[in-house]
Length: 220
Ligand code: TIU
Image 1: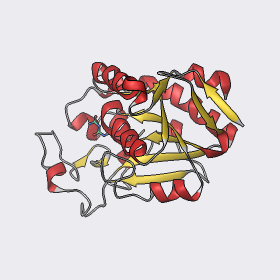
Image 2: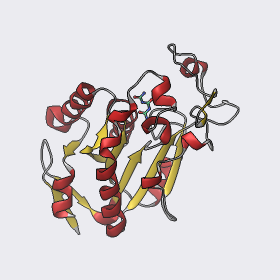
Image 3: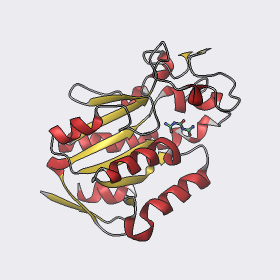
Image 4: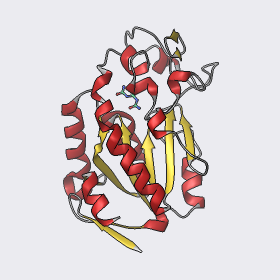
């Protein structure tokens, strides 16, 4: 059954059997104090505001029987998948792999690397650990979507201009139609979020579509 969402720059139409909800990096490392996000000098409190909307979006996807994907930005404990260019960039308070209040920063399996409790994945949902900002780079996501015949992706998560936008651009280049839920994504820089939404839907949807959650909820 086709679902038509009033999105920008035009309606976003998808078949519920061919859509996946992709929730990007809703991890303690980005949303709670003491993790990777704060180590980079960011005010992490700016991200918590979207949690109730992402919770509702996830419930809607589960009720609809959609494929659900959760991603985690993470590295192996030996950091073999973390290029020095990433680990040594800038002057963070703590570098990737160093011990913080929630365990080693951005390392797989550490408490801080977990998805926040409100969005804990359930059986049957795909969890993708990704070493980069994009969800396709060095992961099995592309194969998993292809196996299930997925053609459309609905994105949520953090941060809008970094991992969400990178993943959406990777997906767009791979031929997926992508919708970003405006109030289910956030940035440490509100102006960057707004600019990302504007550039995604510009030029006739050069990267994809955007819509508020209410527009999806009305139809799905
Ligand atoms: N720093 C920042 O805004 N984001 C990241 O490093 N990763 C994600 O966006 N997940």
